[in-house]
Length: 83
Picture (cartoon, rainbow, N blue to C red):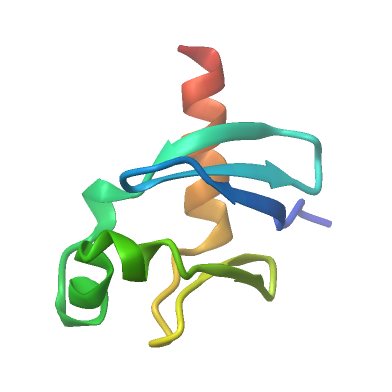
């Protein structure tokens, strides 16, 4: 069975950064700025709205339904840890 990463904890760190903790213990502060393209992400460019994220179904979600796949977030966290 393939491992499916899941966000279990998240904390806002200012700007477009969120510190993420995953179900395998991996963690990193991820900058979401690069993903804020397209109509669904437009409201997130307002930092006060961006900070209204919550953890749902194993990933980061916003009130307008925007989210980022947990696999993408996990890959980013692992890449940052290796750097």
